[in-house]
Length: 377
Image (cartoon, rainbow, N blue to C red; front, top):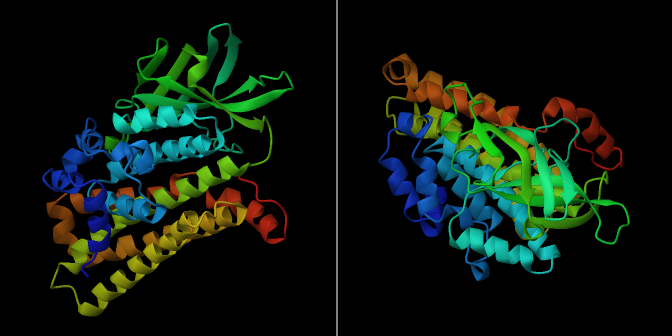
């Protein structure tokens, strides 16, 4: 089996039109602001990737999904990173659907059947915050809740159909507060998008600033979690973080794999150097697939999250070794004659920038190994 064949076969099975379309577009076009990549993802049915087939989705398993993200990352780093945020939001909604009363599944089915893109307004970028910890303030009114706040960077900001945001609202029984997930249509009055991302790298991910100013969310678009405000990580938050680590790791490994693929196709590179890169890349992917298999077996608890973090940091280290060696083996002429090698090399290192960082998790992971609860710093 050729390098990346398994991943691209999975992508072709689930989203058959996407890879051929991406292959036809130069990398520089896919990575610029206003990239066509997100539109191609939408047109291919990508928004429903993680939604069960019974609810009008593609029914991808976690193993399928991490392979799809690696395949997409090998074509467009920006698209892989941006779509991970959509899948992260969708996986959270699917989790709420399993816990809710049926309304959640109606919303999920609507998003999947019409290929709506969902951006994440969750607080995954703030220190000490769980994925559902509020990043917006909510004021209860007779018509629903009014939201105020800012999310930056927010991937998919210019292409999103809906924004998910976590809020704290009073419980319906009056017994304290609870966390809820608000679904905010992109056309809502008071929602605005402004520039934020100034880097040339990953510019196609549309990571801009989204501002909510007195945005009204009606009751039917407010999904309650039954989780008390300020509670320790619950099952839904833990599962969401496992999905985030898994899919983001696969995406960036795909970017590094794009460089490895160029080396493997270069007959002038000595065999032992090519095989070494192959072995290190596939070992990293095997680790990610191990986490995916745990997810598919229904293991989304605290130990799975710890394992996902170990794996994600291990993949960061693998990428840090693979990428510079691949660039060196491709040689200076490749680097000087095309922007692609430099662009891929710069983008591949982005995994280390996503929360939770290894430095902040050092203490919590040590505590976890000493039999204390896992805390996300």
